[in-house]
Length: 357
Ligand code: COA
Image 1 (cartoon, protein in one colour):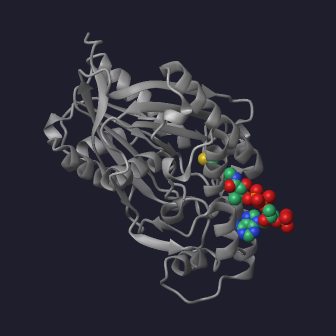
Image 2 (cartoon, rainbow, N blue to C red):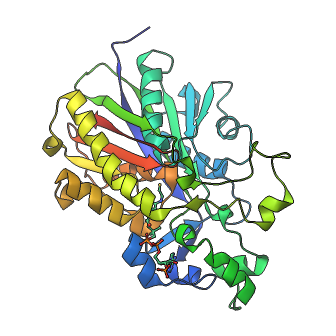
């Protein structure tokens, strides 16, 4: 076992769904407005995939970009870790599909499902795999298709995707309104990192602070399908639209603005640095107001906190690698910078990861 090596990010990349969906499009299938969505969440647009594109396809797109960025060949990858809450199928996970589509032989793949915290949880898993010597060139992908949670009719889909100017049926509008608080938030995308060892203990991942509290699991969850039911998927689930995520938005909001800063402070303390020494905070992109609350609690200036939810919405496990890639390409992360990632999501799972670029 090589426990001396530290792990670091060698390259990154991301892709989005093919179709840009602005807030006005959503306002045609349920009662909402561009103004309401911007004011409450900061979101201006999100991307949806075209029908036929699967989560693994987005993952492949992001993986290829990350490999190119890292200058690593697919055959050099010896482990794949995937974070997603929206796999192509109930089982198996997306890892095997990514491996096959990328032609990566029989290397091991691992799916983790910590929803919006999938990427910070996964960073610890990937880091541990590399530090133990189990992996030398690891591909870590966060990929999600949330648009398929939308309970729309064919006409509803034609309207949202810009193929029809029809008016939504009033009965459908009424039904869609039941989910409008959650449906405005999410988008489809994937982000990927290539990770590997470094012998320099000053650079790479330095520490983690991760937590779970399952007491209030139903504050944010998709009730069905699931193996709490016999059979696990049935007509009642569809009639009652139980497959659409349910969320007590205000409770999630309060948890996020409390637990995300707490975990940032905790990881800084573990590693022995001050929060004020952070060069950049990359929060999971759940809501611009949540990011603002986290920033305020940590007393960080604007230039030290990165947000892009305005353009992509909440893409769950993909938000952090997308934000990381944008920061790298824009020169906002320089060698030696102290970068902290933090997230909270369904479970509840939350936490932070700290690295020296
Ligand atoms: N458009 C217009 N009105 C809407 C709406 C929409 N999309 N969604 C809800 N409303 C209405 C509600 O029906 C309610 O109306 P009422 O006062 O007549 O009952 C009103 O707006 C306020 O709703 P509420 O749910 O209290 O809004 P909010 O201020 O809490 O904002 C969220 C809603 C979802 C934006 C906010 O709670 C939030 O962002 N929470 C965190 C969500 C999150 O981050 N989830 C992912 C975690 S990883």
